[in-house]
Amino acid sequence: MQIIDIIQTDTHGGSIRCIVQKKNGPYKVAQTVQNVIQREMNAKLDKIETYQKFFDKIEKSKVEFLTLINGLKSKNKTLAGYGAPAKATTFMYHFGLGQEFVDFIVDDSVLKQGLYTPGKHIPILSPEIIYQKKPNYLIILAWNFAESIMKKHSKYKEIGHFIIPFPKLQVN
Image 1 (cartoon, rainbow, N blue to C red):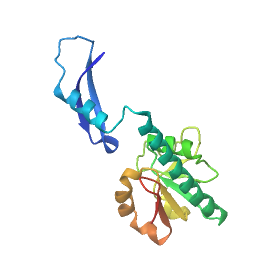
Image 2 (image 1 turned 180 degrees about the vertical axis):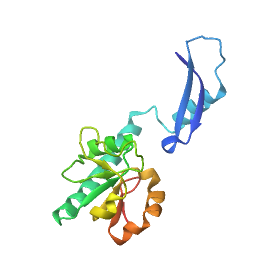
Image 3 (image 1 turned 180 degrees about the horizontal axis):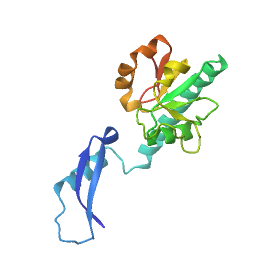
Image 4 (image 1 turned 120 degrees about the horizontal axis):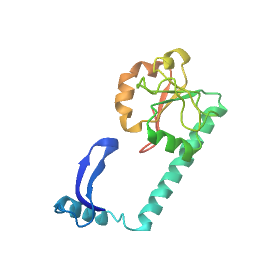
């Protein structure tokens, strides 16, 4: 296969969509392919050191987050999650976040409500439940939408606090 064009999208904070054909197919390779390759080279995405630094940053975030969460749980505080995107599953597994920390997760999508998180089996409910169960802290698992979630649920600030795990750990 051969990449012949690349389209940048805003999905998930920035993604690329690759258009491919069989190698040496009929279509000419667009300049966007070389542009993206050059940008990746400039960002040193071809170097193992770049990924090691990224891993180290994630591990530091993990320690900070778990220190916070363990401290809250030791004070008998209740925690729930907001948002059930696929990246939340990766986050929960890598950070060891399961039912021992999070009582439930809410999501705006009715398609996810009534289901459970993969492997961790944490129930996914409607956002209205946060005003009934009143968790002390709400971990925003769809952190790229933190601002809009906090704005939409500004009333929750009367009940508890938001925790935003990324890009920098914040408690609001």
